[in-house]
Length: 313
Image (cartoon, rainbow, N blue to C red):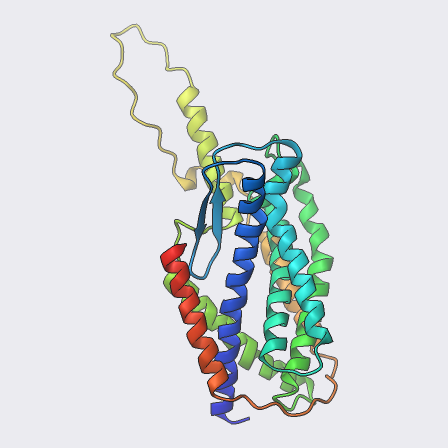
């Protein structure tokens, strides 16, 4: 494959990653959170979507019991369901091309993203997984559950790598393991790095965050409340002036937040699974050309979708 064809393939993959991630975000926030909140009468629903990252949904009425569980966990499980369906459909299509790649990227990305969210949510005790404790919102005693997601992470990473290599085999010669590893880096790796660079450049912290950041915010809120409710020291002098507002800095509560060890192990598990998936040689596939108009059209569509998220999200 010459440089021009590789560039077109990478552009196509980057556009599909952008479109798949935005579709998964809509499924998560609108279908998994906003819709249940509307059905349960949450009222005042506000949806916030970032251009390339995550989002959030807020509503006025607080839910408890099973309603709280559904409204909190709906996004994760809807991503799992739609991702698994798209992944299965991608395997049933006979011809490789953008349609297969889009279903595979959406499917594998949705399933892997849900596993990451669940594992990190239990590890940090924050985010949507607190829906497993809808009344208390406390997962400290269940932090160990994150370990249970390591085997599924390995399986998803292994299958995703194998299936993507099979897709690439219609564009590239992948007889040797070294060739498969090199072309995986040159295609999915390049597209992933490009997406990460765009996300960093367009990141909107007011609309997105991470389970670790949310845990830090939660600890800051707890410490702020504790200090505000603490009785003033006794004094025989004249009444002291009103105390200034309580301000708690992130570094003051960082010792209460678990280290990034757990997420690092999780991501390493995905990486090792991908390496293991490279060992199997893909079945032979007829060559598939990359018409220039398809990647360029997908890139323009992806740019339009990102712009729409910027205006409407």
